[in-house]
Image (cartoon, rainbow, N blue to C red; front, side, top):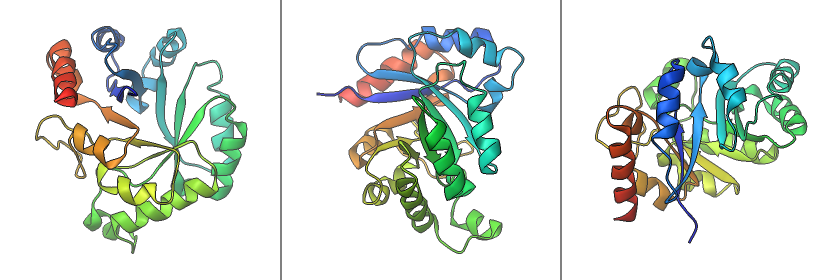
Length: 224
């Protein structure tokens, strides 16, 4: 049976804490990758640290969102890093998505749908007429047409997305405990896997407090 796959969100700008997170989440019971976002990448030594990592699955979550030339140029500037996945907002449009995919080479391009911090009320406030599930399904169709390698969506949209997108699904907003923090569309790990997610993104539920104890707790939940 295939191992469950988890991206640990390294949401810090502190290199020592990042090393601690990586060192304390090593296990052969699940497949583990590491997600680095804007906070880490823009920190003083963030990029340098990323360039030093070896034999790790790196998910660089920059959520690129710009005109095609700028997005492609940004990706080219990352070529010295051993990145496995790179995110782009699907709202960048078809031309940008196709251009990025064409230049991606060995980097898997993951299209970001609607952020887990948003709900129907937020979308209406921004100016969208579609509800979350309808909008995410529409975005998933765009990812399929652009031939992207993966899509990022909350657990609530997985089943709908799988009908129109047949590659990898990465699911943020995963909570081991019943705390939403700044995310509104959240889900428990086992429920997200049951819905069909390929990768779960878990941050504070693991990285806050006793990391080794938290990762062991996750393993027990997944084995239960």
